[in-house]
Length: 229
Image (cartoon, rainbow, N blue to C red):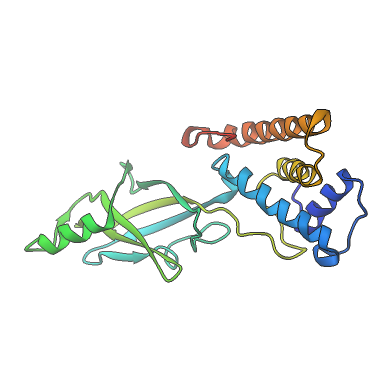
């Protein structure tokens, strides 16, 4: 079940035998636990290409247009496509029926150089190359060749959630591994990470993460690799 930032903090506080709070900003210790929550969230997000963090964009490629703003065209699926420093492109495909095929990403400098060197605009029935770049919080694509007829391209990005900052913000990735890892961080901060308590906290986190990944992998397993580093 999805958890808000405040619920996550109170879950960790309960495990630490601390009093519940009405807001993350209610006390300095609750705020510290909130920082542990965000630190744990980043680790969990980076451990797997979670389906809930995927952003899908469908784009119509038509001649003679070469540059497209992926943030403002096509369909964008939760939460949005504005990139942060940990966003990655998972895959890109031409999904025009009846013969879809994978696309090839090139460095944007190469794409622009090829265009500048061409004496005439490059066209092909089935273009497959492009470059990707960001500018002013938008994601742009520049095609290597323009199609002779309209094509439909699909891009799937992983965009990790921004830091939780308000009590009501809902965590996107599974909550249990985030709670358990944040608890482990809190035990470390208290100097209670050694011995059975600390070892058990880490074991619980790794088990919860593995369970969550296994569940998500049943839907998205072919595209991603799991790491607990």
